[in-house]
Image 1 (cartoon, rainbow, N blue to C red):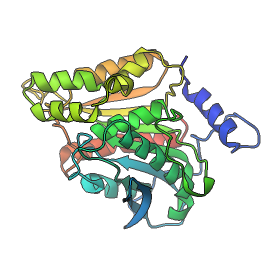
Image 2 (cartoon, one colour):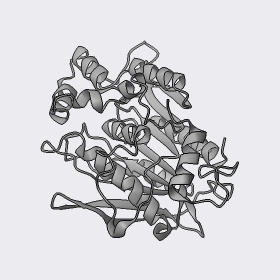
Image 3 (cartoon, rainbow, N blue to C red):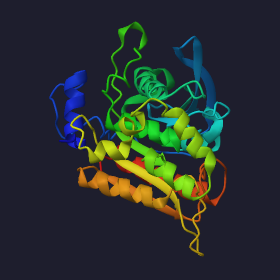
Length: 322
């Protein structure tokens, strides 16, 4: 069976002993004292958060001015799993805009290069989820609820950790000083995620987009890894360890002429994932933005504006416990 949203909350409370009365109507997701505000001034600071493989990785914290504590959102950038020139600054415009509404946004780098393969970056994101929760008070943030956002391949890493936060391969990196904060996501936002790497590989090949095919083969070089690390197949296997937090999924769709600009991942892949997620008992809001290309949240413009409006409404609903 899958862990529904309510069952996941109960498990989280038991695991962390964070409430006095167990799983009542007041859950770790529902926090009536947290709400979005804005517009607020935003300060950005870079901090070291992860040391692995002889390298230190940084996070940029976009912190709104105010008394707080503020809701907190982890942002995981894309980059086809192996493109090391793409960094945590990819979503800078979006992150600043979200922070201005009264959210602490933490954008992280992680192991993303041709020498790193599945599940290295999945483990880094799992660590980041736990690190953000453990350090939330440092940034005037609330550790609960924890939202996680990811785009493209970053969306894939987020989905894997949302579904299987306790998987030993994913949670292998220990927090310093024995801290045991949870990687359980309370809600998830993904933009054009690679929800099914196999189907995405086939779609890119069909559209004549060879780069995603090459990068997929590079990242999933270990035999069987593209099957194991596949969110769509985890759902179809009815993985008993899977959790099902609420998800907002944004994807570019066909324009007025019927042309899909996104040659990286198709609306059909996302629709299939959403259908399977609902069938498993999860709540998912799929929004298809007509005419939007891949990477539409990376630059200011109408597509980002539409995405920000949808993201804000979704986060407000999660904070209200709806």
